[in-house]
Length: 354
Image 1 (cartoon, rainbow, N blue to C red):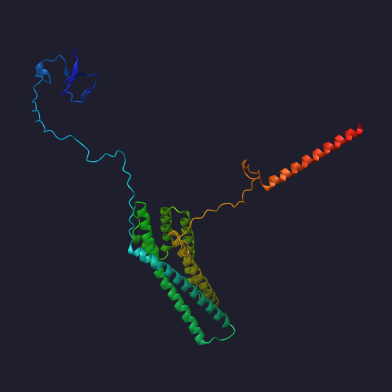
Image 2: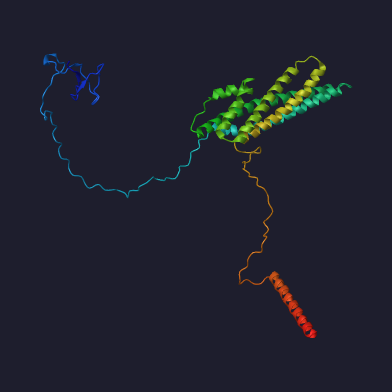
């Protein structure tokens, strides 16, 4: 029985077929022809042997000689190693909205806090008038002035609170943009998203805290993150108090309405404190304290008493004698005199004894 082989079309090697035919030559990865008996006649083979001379390939003409060039040389003395260039100063890009928001934010917040304090005082005056009205009549002019004081202070506080909210939104957008640009990224939240999450009622109880938490993570400051969480909790409590104050005004009972006046005064006072807390949080994120001064890092260490030497320091030989040393030598001299006197007495006694 003749052996069945597969010749390689590239290198000419013949491979014995052991089972299923192969497709690629194991030696040169060339294409293998179809299996055929090794002793098959020429007319039954699927290949044909062709004899060629070793120099059958067309030779390329030798390239023409290139003209000689000057000897290579350095134009400058080579400096082997890395070039240590001084760092270029970073160019800070200032945005007009951020500067305007920074200038207008603190005055707006302070005026808003003052108006909320006035609104709280107006509500307390109204409550005092209600207490007096239980036993005596009140002059209509006094009631008119009280109502006007409450109305003007409340409307002014709400208007300035809205302006402060817009200024805070601009500050949040620019601060987040600067923080993400410093890290080499862009803010994943668009200004429209930040505005909708910060200005829509009820929704703005949740999203501003999330925005501040993301900003605190970029700043890598634990105090900023803690301040953001404190402000977030106070903001939610303030929203709940505002909703409760609005619902309280819908009561029909006179006593409940009077209690609503007192609760409104408490709500206005809380709003004033919340505005001051907001200003403190903003300045903490900017690296300043509540009064706008640059915040300094402090390190508390334990206070200890000055070190007291236990052993007298060694004095050099040529050093002048100190009073202490003179006193010590005087004591030694006195001891020597005493010993000498004692020896003399002892000798005298011995002589007398003889």
